[in-house]
Image 1 (cartoon, rainbow, N blue to C red):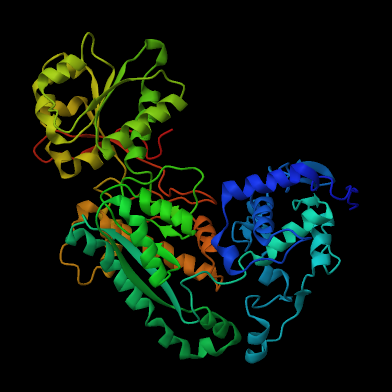
Image 2 (cartoon, one colour):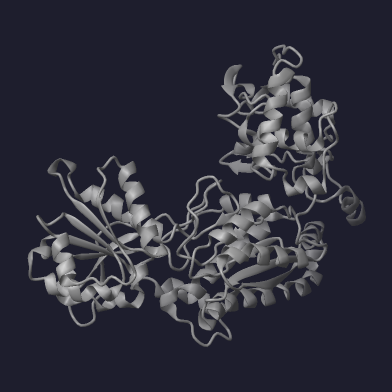
Length: 574
C-alpha cells in the first residue's frame, strides 16, 4: 500500500503546536510512570511533553496539533484516528486483545523491540537460553524504522502485510517519533508493588465499619492468600519440569494483603492513603469496605493510577470517564435507575402520569433520587415533583396524604427507611392506596420483611441481587473460604462478594502471564467472560466498563406471616 505523502511538519509546527502542548500539560499533568522511565527527547521536545502527546495519540487518536490523526483502512478507505484508536484493539496497557478470530498483538516496548517466537512468547531471551528452549522465530525485533513502516504501510519486518482492520497512519516524521517514543515506555517496567517473588495488595477499610463486617470482607481474602502461597510447593513435580511448566513457574508470585485502615473525617483520607502507599507501594487494592461514599478512595486511585477491584460500597462514584476503580454495581444509584426504567415501561406518557420523589437528605437518599431523576430525563420524561426530607422530619400519615393530593399520583418513590411503614399502613385504606409506592431494599435492609401486610399490594421494592430462594445454591461455594469466620451474616452479602472478587482475581492473575502492569490488570478483567457467581444474576464485563452488574429486580412482598419476594420485572430493566 502506498502511503500518501505528508508535508513535513504540516500539523506539527508553528504557534498552534506550542499552544496545544502548553494547554495539554496544564490540563493533564504528568503521569507518574513518566517520572520513573522518561522517553528520550525528540528534536528538543521535553520528555514530559513527548510522553503526554504520545499518550493522547495512542488513547484518543489525536495528533500533537490536537486534530484527529488521519489513517486508511481496508483498501484505502479514510478514517479518523478518534474513531479507531490504538487503544481500541491493543488496549490501555498495550498487550493486545482477542476478539473472535482477530488476535491483536502486543504493541508495548518490551514486546516490539525483542525477537518474537511461536512458542512460549513471554520468555525473555535470557530465560530461553537458561531453559534451553528452542523455537522458530515468528518475527524479528522491531527498530524505529521498521515500526514506522508498519504503522504507515502495514508491512511488518518479515515483509508480511498486516490484516486490513489495522489502520495505516498518515503521520509526519515528528508525529511518528512522538508515537514511537510513547510505545517504547508503554508497559515497559513492572508497576509498583511487584517484586521478583511477590505481589503486594491492600484492602481499604474505613473506621466506622463494624468488626463483624470487616471480618466478613477480610476472612475470604486472607484464606485465599494463604492457600495461594502454598502453591509453589507443587512446582517441583514432573509437569513443571517441562519447558512449558517452567515458563509457568516464572510467572508465580506470592501474595500479601495489607490493611489500610482510614480514620477520622473523609477530608483526611487522602493523606492517610498517600502515607500507606509511600511506606509500602501495592500493585492494586482488593475489595475494601465503607458504609459511606467511596469517592475519596476513588479519587486517590485515579491520581495514583492504582487499580481498586470491587470495593464493598453502596455509594460508588458514578463516572463514564474514570478508569482505576471497578465496582460490583452503581449501588443505590442503580436502584434509582431501575425504578425509572421500570416505570417508563409501565406508565403511558400520553396519560399525563404524575410521579413524586420523596427522599431523605442522606447520601443513600440522594443517590437513589439522582439515579431516578437522571435516567427519567434520559428517557425523555417530564421532571417529577421532588420532596427532600431532613433527617429529623418524620413521615406521618398526614404528610403522605398531602403528597397524594389534590389527586393520587401514579407513583410515589419513597427513598427512606422503615420509619415510613406506619404512615403507609395508616393510608392503606384511603386514597393513597391507589398510588404505587417504590422503596429501596438496600436502604431498608432487614426491615424490608416487616412491611405491613395492608401496604404490600401497592408497595414495590428495588432488589439488586438474585432472588433469595435461588441464592443458596450459588452462595454455598463461598463457604470454602470462610474458615475462622464466626458470624457470616448472609444478609449483608459481604463474604460472598469477597468470594466473587477472589474468583475474578484468580482468572485475572492467570491471564496476566507475567505482564504485571496496572493498566493491563484492568484490561484483563475487562476481557473476562461473563460469570455466574453469588449475589448477582450475571456479572458482565467489557473494555472500559466500570460496573459489572447491570441489573436489578422490581419486587413485591407476598401475603402471610412469612412473606416471600415476588418478581415484577426482569433482571436487566430496559
